[in-house]
Image 1 (cartoon, rainbow, N blue to C red):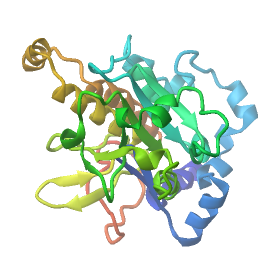
Image 2 (cartoon, rainbow, N blue to C red):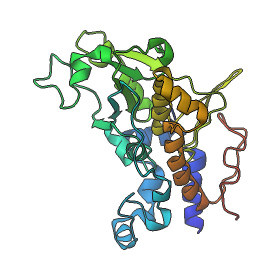
Image 3 (cartoon, one colour):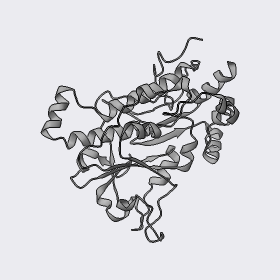
Image 4 (cartoon, rainbow, N blue to C red):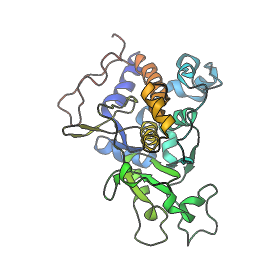
Length: 308
C-alpha cells in the first residue's frame, strides 16, 4: 500500500548504512542523523505498523529462523555451520547496544552460518585497571592481546595477510553504526585500554567481490583500479575467515580448494544474506533513483523490486 511504499523509500533512499571490515557506517540527512543517533531507532521502526506487538502476535512465525513464515530463510541456512579455519578459535562481535534495535541486522545470520561466533554487547570494554573482574569470555583480550586482531579500517590498520601469524586465535569486529563504531574502536593512549593493545587489520577481498546485504545500502569507499566496497558485519566476518583459511591452508585443503569442494564462509553466509535481502526487496516498491546524490550506485537494485 501507499504507506508501506513511503516507509520503504525512507529505508532504501534516505538512509545509507554500510559496513567495511565488519563495521557499519551510517550516513543520514542532517537532523535525521541527529535524531537516530540519540534514539538509536530508524524512522521506519518508529512508524512500522506491521511490527506492532499485536500484529507480530498474529503472524505465523518460523520457529527456526524466528522470522515470519512468509519471509523464512531456513532453506538458505546451512544444515551445519562452517567451521573456523585451523588455529582460529573465535569470532567476537563487539556490539553497540543500539545496534540490536536496527531493523535489518546481519549478526544473527552470521551466527547461524559460522561456528565460534560470539557477541559482547557494550559501548566500550572496561579498562583492566578499573574493572574488578574481566568480562567472562573476553579474558584473551586482556591477558593475551597478541592472540587477537581487530578488523577495523582506518589509521594504523594493516592488511590482514601482512599481520597474521601462528599466534592469532581470535578475530574481533565492531558491530555498530559508523559513528558509534569509531567511538568504540578509538584507542585511548593509556596502557590499560584493552583495544589499544590489539593490532588492527583491514581486509583484502578477492577482485570483483560485491556486497549482497543491500537492505542496508553499501557504499563505494573508493573508485580506484579496484573498487573498494563497504560490507555488512556478516560479510566482513566471512571475508576475514576465508582470508585466514587461505593463509593457513594445509596441502589437503589446497587440493580441496582447487577441486572446488571447499565450503567457504563467504559462499555460505552470502547465500543466507541474499535470501534475506531478496525477500525484503521483493515486497518493496522501487524508489526513485537519485543519481545526483552523493554515493549513488548505478544498478544496485536492478531486478530486486516488484513491478509498480
